[in-house]
Length: 530
Ligand code: C2E
Ligand code: MG
Ligand code: MG
Image 1 (cartoon, helix red, strand yellow):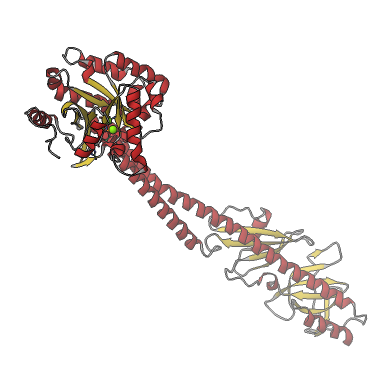
Image 2 (cartoon, protein in one colour):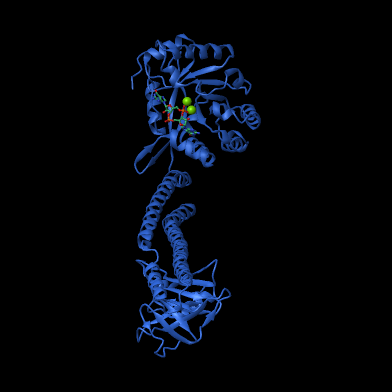
């Protein structure tokens, strides 16, 4: 019973594990997948933003080179025309003009301002290749606007810092462009803290935050960096969909696994554990089928056959005997059959020394002397002779040759005749089986069925009978269902028969009644057809 409870607990635990395990695994996998996608997406976006930064920067350099191409004096009509062309040609250039000695001179937008004292402070940064940069220079054209100015050779271009960060992005991820030599934030998306972006750049994007992911892209040609930040959950817009998909897979596979585990274990419970329980509680019955001598239709013995009813339904011995064999329950089952047979037929056997009972055993019973010893101790103190208890074993039981040969010899030495059951259904030859020194051959019902039929297998029964005669083995024909079969077998010299023509297997009490009726005087051929 303890085993039964253990199995139920294990079944429940397995069911839970099978259900929860895949769901948790799915969650973990989905989370990992989202994180990986998060990182990849923000890295890709940072690279795109860096392409924009480089484009804007190189446009400013190209614009300055174009301004140098005009040899005219600063603020000459031709220089101003050239500056106007530059503004027109370069999308990101907002204004282009001339300056000298810390003052604006002129530009197409400013006009000629040489007489006005429009001062230009010293640049914030000088590059090695001669460019001057004012990071946030107040435009003379506006009271609020601050431009990024790049100058060289007395020319300057103004860039709106927004140009660096106004990428079209449905997720509206904040961007910052940083000049890495000075650590200056040149441009940053509106509403974003420049110090936070600067900090992210300093840490290469590896900033721990529950809400945000950061990525940094560096320019390969200029001392420029771009920092992008992205909200962790919104970067992958389909994250809830992904999770739902994984959850569905998890729940479906979990439920399927749980169901399979439940089915398998409950089946195991009914067939193995319940069988074990039934054996230990002696809930298995034994019935007896008469074996008749064909010469005079006298019942000379019976075969003991197990019966088991589970919830009112009879389970075929073919099924549960196999389950018992596969689960090491066959020895207790054989013991129980022996015990019940002694209890139910003991008196009959003692009173009729020529009457016998044959017991079916399995290969496990023939590997050791255990069952023989049990049989010996059961016989002790009774008047039942050893020859009255016969042993039936199928061809399969003889496969474990070394161990079996000695045990079979010991059974015979102790006086128990050995029967080969279901002969012809295995693949062993009779000559091989005879090396085990057997006594009786039981021809399987499948061959008896073919008697006098015009089928290919109908030649097998006469062949087996002839061989058995040659080897001086007695024969019991199994599954005899008609008087025609009985007559045929008798004519072929088969000594014994067992089958529904004579009687089905019955309880010990019914057997006593049946035997009583048989002993009343009657004609040999007037047996009732059952
Ligand atoms: P088996 O030892 O060959 O037993 C003969 C089977 O044929 C029995 O089936 C019996 O009821 C059936 N039978 C007998 N006469 C007729 C007939 O005229 N027509 C038909 N259709 N069937 C007939 P059962 O009782 O269902 O047993 C099936 C098998 O289960 C047995 O075949 C035997 O191999 C195994 N078995 C039964 N009891 C035991 C047991 O106590 N121990 C072991 N190890 N195996 C057993
Ligand atoms: Mg048998
Ligand atoms: Mg048989």
